[in-house]
Length: 221
Ligand SMILES: Nc1nc2c(c(=O)[nH]1)N[C@H]1C(S)=C(S)[C@@H](COP(=O)(O)O)O[C@H]1N2
Ligand SMILES: [Mo]
Image (cartoon, rainbow, N blue to C red; front, side, top):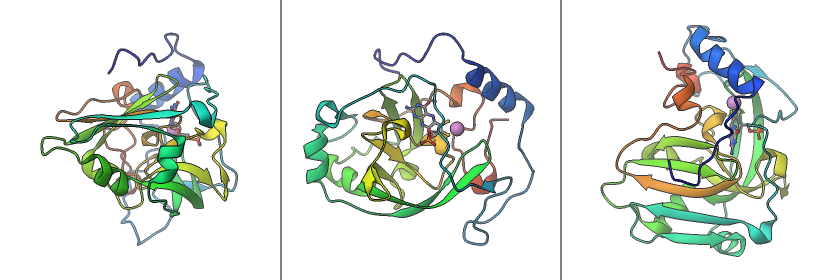
């Protein structure tokens, strides 16, 4: 974790509840499903609205002030402002959200830079195996490089034809739809490429290191 990551010191009610759920295995059904065979992963329910879940700090970052550092084990480290983000190839994937608290939301139309295009721009070195996402509220989450590079994953600034709202992590968040949504860091400020894994905010509080909803990887054992 870099010196700049300062998650809230006082556990909130939500933080305490979610850590307790991890200890108890709340929401686990014991079933598994194959992606493609069923649309809804085990233990999930479809919702039509879009719940807001975060640590409660809600940074308010104007697009003009937003910057993304892309650093660590890459050939071409970069700092992108919003204009630089828009100058990259833009993708508009459609994907489902699966939150570990059991809601799923279908058919989200995103706009942003596919992680594959970001990787082509910064060129991870051979030793890079993991990614840590750093957010403006002090939140962090970790991904294997292969999960970060998933064809549906993107650095998103738009949702349903509009700018991504601040409550959902705007101006810019990560979206990694094939994993539980806690891996999709809101208010993204840095992407760090590493040789060693480094569990993030929820991963050190009992959540699964990978978080595959199809295997119901909600919590670490
Ligand atoms: N920066 C940041 N990103 C975050 C979080 C957070 O607290 N801070 N919470 C995660 C969790 S637990 C979930 S379920 C989703 C919720 O995203 P939403 O509020 O857009 O639904 O954001 C994830 N990304
Ligand atoms: Mo979550």
